[in-house]
Structure formats: C-alpha cells, structure tokens
Length: 174
Image (cartoon, rainbow, N blue to C red; front, side, top):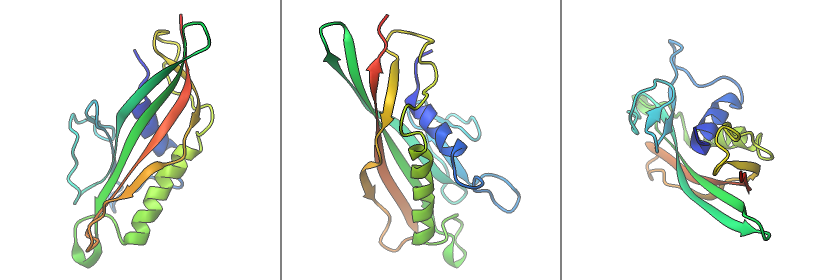
C-alpha cells in the first residue's frame, strides 16, 4: 500500500474539526468528504465524485502534483506533494434545501476545515510511510492554504472555495 495524502487530509479534516461534525435534525451527516482521485465518499463508501448539494456540503480533495527534487550526492529526494481542496454547498435561506445559512456561515466552515489541517502542520503522520519503502515520504511540513479562490455565485445561493496545501518532506529510499 502506498501513501495516500488525499485520504489522510480528508480524515484529518473530520478528526480535527472544531466541535461536532455538521448533522441534520435526524443526526445524519450533512457534510461529505470526497476522495476525488479514488473516487469515494468517505461518509458512505459510495464510489462517486459527486454529492447532491441540496443534501450535503461537499469537501473534495485530489492530488494536484508531486515534485521530487534530488538533494545531496546520494539518491535522496526532497518532495513537495500538492493536494487541492474544494469546499462547496448551497444556501438554506428562504426555504432552499442546502445547509449553508449565509456567506459568514460558509466562511466559518471553510476556516474550520483549514484549521483542522493546520493543527497537523508540522510533522504530519501520513500513514503507510513504512509499508512500502519505495516512494514513501516522511513529511515535515504542511503549508498554510495557498492559491485560495472564492468561486461562489454572485447571488450567494451556491458557495465554493478552492485552495491547496503543499506537503513537504523527504522520500525514504531503501
């Protein structure tokens, strides 16, 4: 098994989420984490990249790039792995079916997700680092959010924010 930075990041968001994970009046989750590379919805195990935004807020992540750079005179590499994140949802105002109350509420949810990642910003323990010694990376840093872009609709019935995090470390060589 190889390292899966995307799955680790999505699991970290839920594990470190401030407070309780958002649920509806029946206690069912209304926020789904989606592994866009696999594809899988972590809350349900369903094999899809999409969620109906009237029923769920969606936090999707995918591997953007991996850049190994040789260091020293041996076969060692400094590695930067970039994971892109997309957080989206729809409004619940005026009887709409979404789960976002306002632009401020959406901003709070985005900040919660970013905070959950920031808690692990130094020496993140991405699992499987020793399961397969070829190509695994011992990370020492996760960048703060980068390339953050607000793509929400002007009338604020659809909310979307994209950003990236870089994992920085050294490849384990056998």
